[in-house]
Image: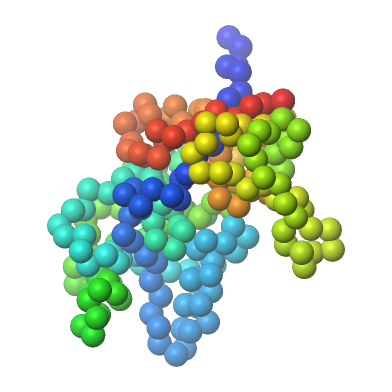
Length: 236
């Protein structure tokens, strides 16, 4: 039996769909002695280079949106507030069977939130530790990266120099939101080896996923609504 041809997919508009963004945020107590940890966590969640440690990580997750009501039927993987990725216990178990490289999975308790009495429009400000949300939950912190983008094969992509503070700033790619003309081309050797879920070093906001992980999620019946907009990458 020969191996199936490599296929790689990318999430188009993963962070753009408000209706699929879980109203959940990571929490660190704001006591003065934890100020450094609090600031680190807030900055680290959307940062693809910052690694959590035993002393510098969220203590839990809580439901930020006080208008969310009684709905607790969360997706198995999807965007959450603060540009993080929220996952269920079932997804944690499934991902444990795949190569994630440097990516971190933080399994954390999830709590209802306590609203700010001064202004409820601001939403919940902290977890209510007396009201845990049943189930297993976690934060998926994707740190795995590949240098796979093949510029000459891409279409509809805007390339521009960013990170000017570097001696040799990279030519970063900006991917438009839901354009039929967009084609992401990848070096096949780089894209088809290593982690099954990753970011490219020159695209900040597009997660890539291997075909074997995509199929495993579908076969397990896990709910990942953003997968409906997966687009297949062009391998060269």
